[in-house]
Amino acid sequence: MPSVTASFVRATARVAGLAMTEGDAILSDGAVVHRVRAADSGLAPNMEYFALVDWIRATQDDEAELVAAYAATIEPEDLGVLGLAVKTAPTLRTSLELLARYFRLVTDGAAFRFDERGELAFLTVEEPNTPHPTQQFRNECALAAIARYIRFHISADIRFDSVSFRHNCRSTPGAYKALFDCEVQFATDRCGISLPKAMLDTPNRSSDPAVCAYLTQHLEQELSKLRSESPLGVELLGLLAEALDDGAPQANQIAAQMGMSERTLYRRLATEGLTYRDVLRQAQTTLAQKLLIDSDFSIAEIAFLTGFSEQSTFSRAFKRWVGQAPAQFRQQRSAQ
Image 1 (cartoon, rainbow, N blue to C red):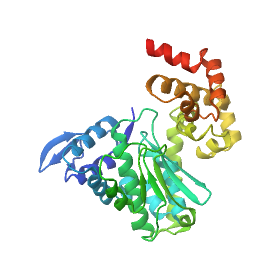
Image 2: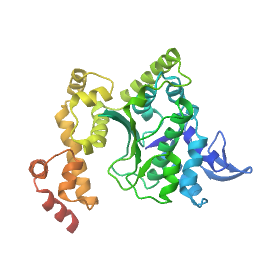
Image 3: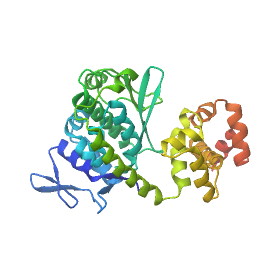
Image 4: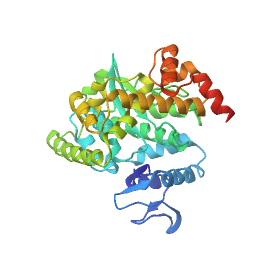
């Protein structure tokens, strides 16, 4: 079951002037108003967290103000070891790399991808294929918190190129522009924040490379434990599904993201009776079928979202995988 660190739950409660007990109770003036179960692992079920978020949102008149309040409330320490590693990293680049690599340790409901292209750097939110509606609000909070962290803990002079969200704006667009101090776009094909690559070498104010290296070793150990609990093919399938809208990724790119060499990736997949191409095809097939059944995207758009540059190539591949052309598959499932 997707989960989130209890620290996020406590921070969200603080935004609304609430408190969370060591158990599962959310308190207002000493009275229990909500409950979110936190397991011994320190993680709480995503659905219960989302229920709390929606309950809080219902009490607010302006979502943009609530997003700003969340960003001003949450601190790096709320991310535990990851937050401390990010805070003591040498530069902004290292902070964003750490956030992207280890964020899965604090929640398995979302992830970040960090990359540099041309003159810009991008921190992109990678959502599940079927995100919960409340995920949209959480994405706004996450990017607002990151923007505040960068300006407060690194440099107030850093300026972002733009911020974008896949969903429509539910508040006043000007409020988001004031919050991020840059252009904010809604209803785009990407959710993330971009900034000039020249800003990435800006040092952290609390930089301590030795402490950061020590904390990163701990994070790597925790990540290794997480990976050992599930087959590599399952993890790879999830990463590929998240990355397909930027084209089918090369094995060396995914291997680097997973912290291993391309050769090691191939070898470990082989022990599970898999190849990289097998898992990529499974990710494309599963996503294509889901989009054909559950979305109004055109065949050409689905081809792009599943990593193909040409609709004709996608259609031939889909028919080879499923035995039907995409349009025929959609029509038949719609009739059913």
